[in-house]
Image (cartoon, rainbow, N blue to C red; front, side, top):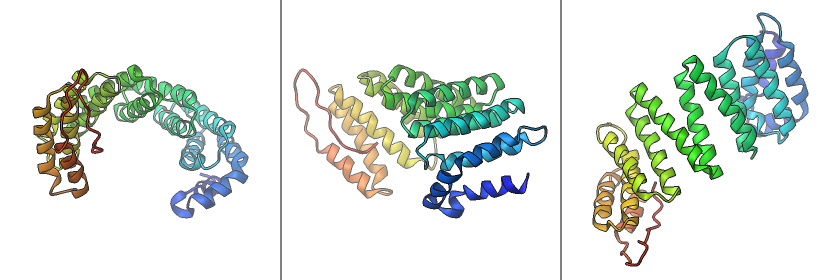
Length: 274
C-alpha cells in the first residue's frame, strides 16, 4: 500500500480524529479521495483501493453530498468487480447503501442492497447476507413497504436457522412479528412472537431480549381481546425485568395496570417496552 493511500485511511479515521475533524477534512478532500481510489486500478493494487473506499464510508455521511457519495461508490465497486472480489464488493455495496439510506435516498440504498443480496446468494456468503437482509428489512419497514420487509426478515430467519444461531433466530422472528403487527395482522404477529419466545426460553444470557418478546406476546394478545393471556405474558416479562432493568419493569407494571375497554375494537395499551 502506498504511503499516500495509508495517509488517507488515517485521515478519515473517526476513532483517531473524531467526526467534526474528519467531516471538515473530507469536505475539502473528497475529490482527492475518489482520485486515489481510482488510481489503484492496476493489477495488485485494486485491493488497496477497495480498502480505502471501505475506510471512507463510515465518515462519508458527514459530507452531505450525494453526488460525491455516488462517485465514491462507483469508484470502489468498479475496483472490486475488476479484482473479482465478491466479499469486498458486497462490503462496499452495503456500506454505500447504509450512507444513502441514512441520507434519505432510499432508492439508491435499495438498489445497492438488492445487488449485494444477489451476490451473497450467488457466492454463498451467508454471513454477509444476514447483514444485508437485516438492513433491507429495516429499510422497507421504515419506508412502509411491509410486504418487502417481511420477505427480507423471513429470509433472515432462514439464514439464521441454517447458521444455528438461536438468539439471532429469535431476533429475526421478532422482526417478522413487529412487521406483521404494523401491517394490522395481530394474529400472525402473535404466532411469530410466540416462536421467538419458545426459542429464547432455551437461550442463556438473553433475558432482556426474552422480556421484550414477552411484552410483545402480551400486546398482540391484548389487541385481540385476550386480556388474561396478555397479563400472563406481561407477568413473565416483569419477573425477568425486576432483576435487570427497573425502568423497563415499571413500564410493564403500567401495562399490567391497564384496564380493558370493551367495544367493537379491543383497546391497545401503549406501554413502551419492546
